[in-house]
Length: 305
Image (cartoon, rainbow, N blue to C red):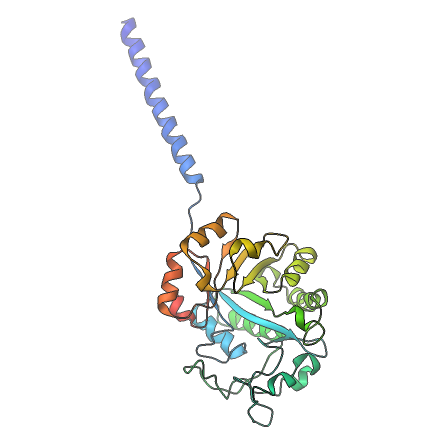
């Protein structure tokens, strides 16, 4: 009888031990982070493939297509206004003068936005001419808006239409050879941009990106809580990272610089990978297989599933 009791006790302990082991295993499995399959889609300059770039109609169209992020560029006017524009001048590719005349390639840099007041800048038409690089782009008269106006327009549109919030990827267009020629120096430039973003209360929804490491260094020092993206157009990852004193949250290379090995290396360094500007369907599909974190594209509908 005593032997039977001991056997039953040993069986009970074995069952209890098995349950505890399975419980521990399940708990451990729950703690293992699973990589999300969601790839963030960013509308480049709105949706440049079909709408005038960096325009309010273009940003709204991108939102209607379901982008997660609207990507845009900012420059400065003579009177200290933050203007949404890719170039610090009136591009001959898509801009018409207030009189409706075309601008030649030789003339375009004479229209330096940093030497023009915003009232003058707003009179130029950035949508009626279209852009030969984007034959499907809708032609409509529009203008270079202020950053503050873009934010108000987007936020009001989202509320009015009961849409999900979007984030903002704002590129500070900066070139060290252009300091005090077509732009302020980095510290001043950053202050102008951040003043607008703080006044609009959208800091949790933004990241700042730039090719100019000096802009990123200034942002890192003055606004350490803001997400930063390091834009690169050439070079190896290791060499590019030697040019910056800290590790940004995002590494944003030209998509042709990437392969699976490089994506893995960048992620292991603690950064997200968001390539630009990925437009052809085959290229979009290819970078998706690399498990990038986001895609910046002129054709967001091609990347959205």
